[in-house]
Image: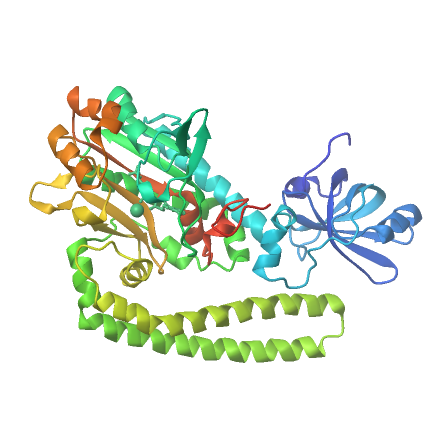
Length: 499
Ligand code: 4AD
Ligand code: MG
């Protein structure tokens, strides 16, 4: 009994004495028995201590939420218990006290929780999301490793824009100015000419002045780059990768996803082939009378849902008023809070939809698709959808001009279903030196500033391409989150730098 046993392994120790250490998640007492909900990062488990264990009982009575403790006890199989087991405590030692822990089992608003993110991570919701994040990142590395890609770590301090000069974060760099990297792509293009198939995974930075639910100022991006690849090859790679990632999460996290209230059906449908349409076809869809009819149907079903939720709220509030025990009221308050959030969300969607329909119907060919346009398009498909061949003026300088239609580039965005919008942006790259320098000048960039990058077109240039997957956007979609800020341990947004 020298080893500490983790909660996730307790089931292998039925009828044995064990030692365990961790934190108190919550506690209730029936006078003769104290029920402790314990957590240690691997799960949550119930332990009980009876008055017959006088010392342990007295120690348990002093414990408050998030106090740290060590205990000894016997594992008992109990099919009704969350992990299938319960611990009967025989000894208990408090380790670290916890006075007035600010996050109670009661409902809190998102701003309060974000201000206490350093503590909120201990709660079940963030922990579930972060476990999914871990698996997703692991599965990305696994996928590219299995396919013979070499990992290339690209720099974070860079000289200039890799995407959009408007969103660069400047940094003092001795007597010069440097910037935080927006993408590893330009360096990966260089590395793919050396190693063939490469990828990078790291933090990227964008000074985006947008307060949307899809934007962080610091986010993590996974970027593969492949020599001798055309747009179609890059799309096939993205498709295989997304299927692999979703399968990996489904295989390991059904419980976490269920806890997050994620409907698994849409995830199970993520199978090849993904539909694709060109940007021009997407614009036709935005202009089509079908869109208005579709928006009317969405309004109708949202109103029905709103009615259902309002009814649900009423009955939960009644149950809460009738509840005798405080822990029952707390649990109901949490549900009430969640339903209120859903109601607010539906009301916002309904309020904004007319404006979004108008934006869609007056959309001008040449603009980049906005968030609401992406939502409209992605909602029309039951799996991720590629939008390809955007106008040159809407996209970055490095994308390859389409020989069949020089107004557009050979690029793709992958839009996640259920309205989540762009999770991947990628393209074939311009491999012709002259066309590339012209494109740079058109975007107001000085080719001289990118001389090393242009060398790749001077010495053995080949068709090549790749893409970037925004990890937090992928997590938001897979976990069914309302905002990307929950998909990263410590989010940085325009309005938040702490904790
Ligand atoms: O479309 P983006 O800007 O593409 C690139 O950076 C390319 N250089 C990638 C490449 O081809 N190697 O960004 C790629 C993805 C987006 O699809 C989105 O998922 C995510 O990065 N992303 C953001 N995620 C969170 N917050 C932001 N501000 C993001 N900006 C982009
Ligand atoms: Mg993009």
